[in-house]
Length: 116
Image (cartoon, rainbow, N blue to C red):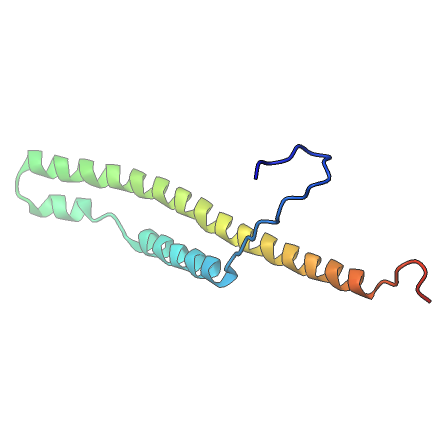
């Protein structure tokens, strides 16, 4: 069956959308845990660089540590975005579900014209 243009008398079947709020919450918490772990990691490049015993190697270790700090910061920003997005999606769908349930309840309780 082809899609009908708007305004025609034929109706299309509704699509079912299921959102598992618990899964969204679990994923947001998991991302939060990863972010926490990343923020607790301290750059030990300077400590390691002091023990390698070679100036050029120590410089490379420090360079790597500096780049990792920058990359870790960018990763944290992106993970925060995903965590906040998952939380917002969950909250929005829970609010929408509650609102639709309330409207459906009201619609079934409202008398129709001619009912007394």
